[in-house]
Length: 176
Image (cartoon, rainbow, N blue to C red; front, side, top):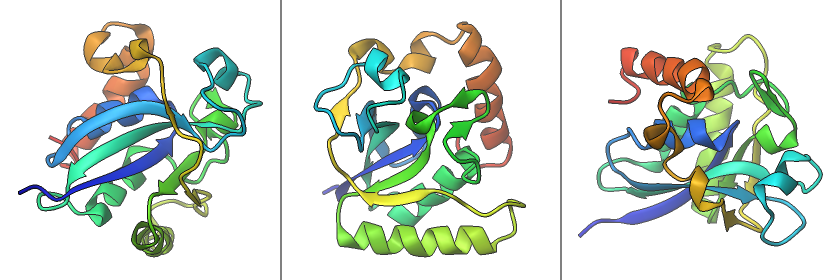
């Protein structure tokens, strides 16, 4: 019997986060969405203004008998730059912030330890700025955002941003 857990992570554009975690063993589903803002059920257009307080996130359902939350966090750290405040590459704004939305106290504790260890690792020259906050005001993104990379591999953003990230993570063995 699977031990199913859910986590919600923001690491820039949700298309990237979704594409990465769809390739991780033990991940059962990945849904792009919005979390952490002050309005209910925002639209993508509203999120893009940077005024709603939401982050683009991926809600990840995983089997903790196959992959532990700590391992999910290790993939998260390597899949984006957690040292840049409110941006990933050319995606700039609070909606692209690095954030771990925890679902329970155990996830909060593990996220804080993982962040501290990642920061001490020396992998990044700058300090990690990732927020760790309780999940609030989550809603799924519009249907056309779901499975975006897999459905649109020839779209320029997919070719120039997502594909190189996936290639790097595959080469280093982070994803399959």
